[in-house]
Image (cartoon, rainbow, N blue to C red):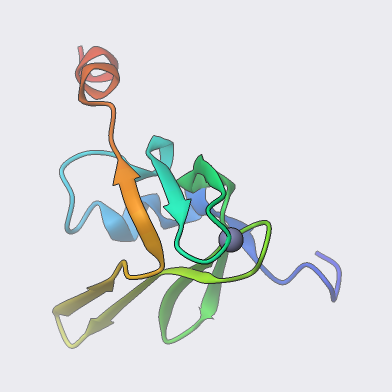
Amino acid sequence: MSATMNYLDGNAAAGELSRIFATDLTSAEGQCANCAAKMRFAESHLYSHCPGLVARCALCGHVLLRFANVRGRLFLDLRGMTYLRIDAAKQEEASN
Ligand SMILES: [Zn+2]
């Protein structure tokens, strides 16, 4: 890991997010509320060496998601995304 690349990809958030969502969000498509880029959540830049997790847009760096576990209370902030689209049919296919 170089000094300029201090993040993981969004796939690294799968474990923590599975505490809230029964479906895998890393394959969901989201739209950045700042630059309107549409991409899979897995393509976001995930910063995990802060309290909780912060996912940023791979294009403009805008915060897409913040997640924190404070003594068993889970906080989720999705304001950085216009939407998060989950393809339920693919999720069901993968689980079968
Ligand atoms: Zn963006």
